[in-house]
Image 1: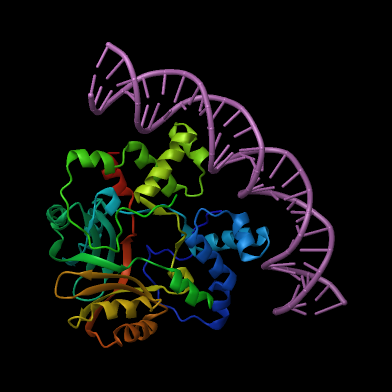
Image 2: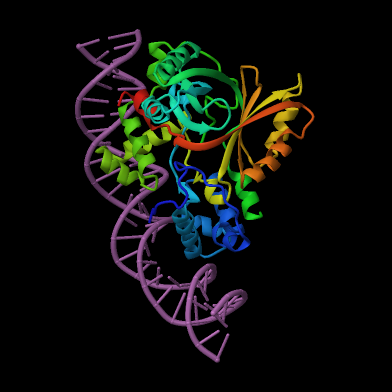
Amino acid sequence: MTGDSPVSSGDLYILTTVTPKERRHMAIDRLDGRLIELLAAEPRIGVLEASRRLGVARGTVQARLDRLQSNGVIRGFGPDVDPAALGYPVTAFATLEIKQGQGADVRNHLATVPEVLELHTTTGHGDMLCRLVARSNADLQRVIDRVVGFDGIMRASTAIVMENPVRLRIIPLVQQASGD
Amino acid sequence: MTGDSPVSSGDLYILTTVTPKERRHMAIDRLDGRLIELLAAEPRIGVLEASRRLGVARGTVQARLDRLQSNGVIRGFGPDVDPAALGYPVTAFATLEIKQGQGADVRNHLATVPEVLELHTTTGHGDMLCRLVARSNADLQRVIDRVVGFDGIMRASTAIVMENPVRLRIIPLVQQASGD
DNA sequence: ATTCGACTGGACAACATGACCGGCGACTCA
DNA sequence: TGAGTCGCCGGTCATGTTGTCCAGTCGAAT
């Protein structure tokens, strides 16, 4: 039931022009949008309760959920863990400059560092952007040393996060995509 | 049951020194870690099945889960929605430079843009960092125009994400924090 | 007109849930 | 040393939910 997503974010993002015909196959409709909102607001809700709230039959909700998951629109329902509550209250973003041809090695290196929560390769004069967490500012130094203590990395510039006024969110986008 | 988290990521991160005594109260132990891993791997698992896999009593899993949630370690189980599958395959990070004293206005402005998935205020010469998505590179221009089309923003520099070798992850950190 | 897909409303057995309980062992503290 | 506290165990119970069927309706496309 948990089929491979047709769009893997591990891949290169391929830029496409989407025709109206294709849109019909990939877009989510209002009911999908409402379902996702509902699940986001009250995740421990069951299929049955969701169907009651949405005013549709239980089978419909079940079918929509299955479709959203095999579509890859909903990747899963993993627990949302707060690094701060784990003892890592400091977040930072590091821009890394990479030696030519060392990209793969650097990726592998960074993947082994638990404090690297996320890594992207980007355009622009920095080559990679990664999200780090640490136990304290002093600990951040240790993390950065570990991150940049690798041959392929030429330079790193780090920005420490002070405030996070907009937490990672998806609902507004879902609403826009579903015409809600 | 879903009490307020003692550590809200919307707040300023306060840097603390953690004594061993405090650690005992906040850290997660091996069982917590295994439970989180299990939930991350198979989110639709129930409490009963989890207790079987972990080899502990059902009540124990229930109690641990409750504690992790009221601790704020587990914020929730929201659906993990893939923007690419919604029709927004382009991701970018924008560094914004803000006019003095306009921070709050800019935050409010950005919060109204659905394509802004995340916003941080940071140290460094850029003042804010935000994560954007768009339907295409051309669409990204529209999104950026909307983001920077606001009085308080002086300059923006954008890095388009090409690849995402390490997806947002938390398990390695959980393992480290739980001594697993 | 027919076929197709999506939705409805209903049924069923199997299962999971929340809420309890008494009891056990480990720990803290006076 | 003894009392209290805490987390965990293994069990019970009524209740609600799940997965899986089914026949029937509706609208859109062929």
